[in-house]
Length: 359
Image 1 (tube, rainbow, N blue to C red):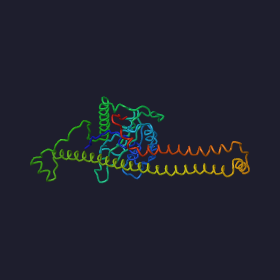
Image 2: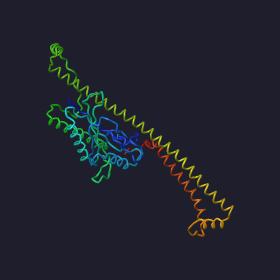
Image 3: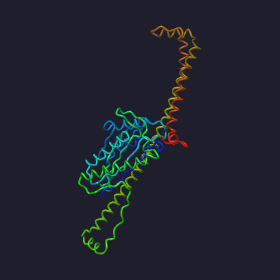
């Protein structure tokens, strides 16, 4: 019995998430986030039956989601939108793939976005019929040249958003039922939320037949309802499992960022100490040379050792270089310190200020 399930959610920086991490996990690929320098490698993850892109170069997932991240500047930006759908067990892998690819193309045409999609097999030990798909959509329009444009506000608007979601749900119902009909299956799905009917009371005669192994009409209806309940529970369990895995991934990502910030901070301290020490040594050496030998003696020594003519203002140049070295050391320290603060304070920056609207 086919089950209807379609859920739409967002990937937001305010929750500590990124489009690159979400794409790598769902597609079981390796993506290096060019904005943070973090590497999300899920190439060992199993269970991805098929995947692809629409509105973008085939399988160029890393480029797509790095551009999606680069297009957003706010700390609480929404960088991707995800559609999670249950696939009918009555369809084979080829039919499911055609169905998901066509639905992703429909979303591209309707909103002008680009998307990555992936079909996941049922988790090990679970109901093998619970195949599902993830469609990860950009939150901005993407043209044929790969340029990101304006935000797609239709799904976020308080008035238009609910109508758009209903339209998406109805489109998925239409496409699935058409594919089920083509395959010869009598199953159908409905986007309207309908409770599963309660079990029928069989009565003494039907119960006696069922106990003897004779299937009855009422017994068959009860079995279909029990199967629908079981599959519905399995889908909910799968979603909860996905959310737990995503939470664990977010925690690991947070720890990785903190470790990166600490490593950069140690490098800043080491680099600053080295630069300042070298600048101070250079300044001290110049002053000692001036005190011990005098300016003319030093110029004569440089002239003798150098194969080129020394300018008369060479001494002033040396002094300027020494003083400039200290200025460069201070500027370098300030620049690196600002970068460390940016990395170390990512959690604070990710939290939207009071009254600040997500974009």
